[in-house]
Length: 259
Image (cartoon, rainbow, N blue to C red; front, side, top):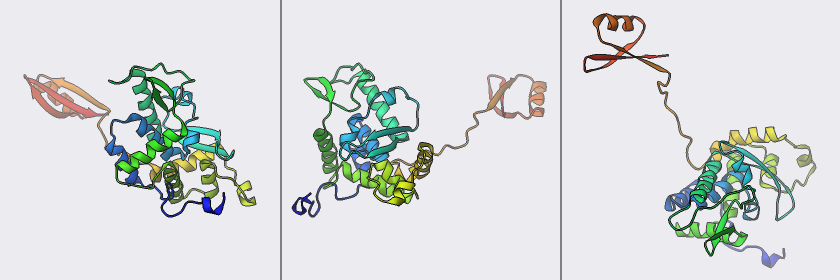
C-alpha cells in the first residue's frame, strides 16, 4: 500500500469497538436476527466479513446444541491460517437466525435450509442469495451510524476481540492464530498450541469477550420430593422422615423434602 493510501484521521475501522457500542446496536435492533447473528459471530470469532460470508452453515446444522464450535479456514485477504471459535453468544444468535429463515417472517416466505445454503443471506426478488462483502460491511457500518457511532466497522469488532483476549491473558501469538495474523518471527513459529489448548485458552478468556454478562443461576431446589398427608399420624411420619410442611389444601397437607 502506498503511503497516500493509508487511512487518515478517523477512517472506518480505525476505532476499536467496545461492548457498549455493540450493545447499543443490539438494543436498537432487537428483532433483527441477521444483524445479531453477524455481530455476535464477528465478536466471538474475529472473522473479517470476507471470511464470515464463506463460513459453511452445515457446522451449525450439525451441532445445534453446541456451546462452542471450532472453525479452521484460510483467510481470504492474506492466505494465512485461521483457527477460531464461535462461542455461546454467536452460536445462539446464528441458530436463532437459521430458525427464523426456516419458519419465515411476515415479509419473507420460509426458506429450505440445506448444508449448502449460505450462512448469511440477502434477498433478491424475495429469493435468498449469499450476501456479498460490500453489503455485509455496509450493514454493520450503518448499524453503528444509526446509534450515533461513526467510523466503526466490522474491523473495529475484530480489534475488540484482540483487546479482550489480551485482557483475558491469552498468549499474543495464540491470539494471532485466532485472528489469522501472519506469524512472522521465530518465537511465533515455536508457539504452536494444539486445537484443544487453543480452545481451553479461549474459553478462559471468553468472559472478557462476551457482550452479555453470564447468567448466574441461583440454587434451585430441583431435587425435591413432595408428599401428602391427610391424618395427624401421616403428618408425624413425614416430619420424622425429614419432610417440611408446605401448605394445606382442602384438608390435605403438602410436605416437601429436598433430596
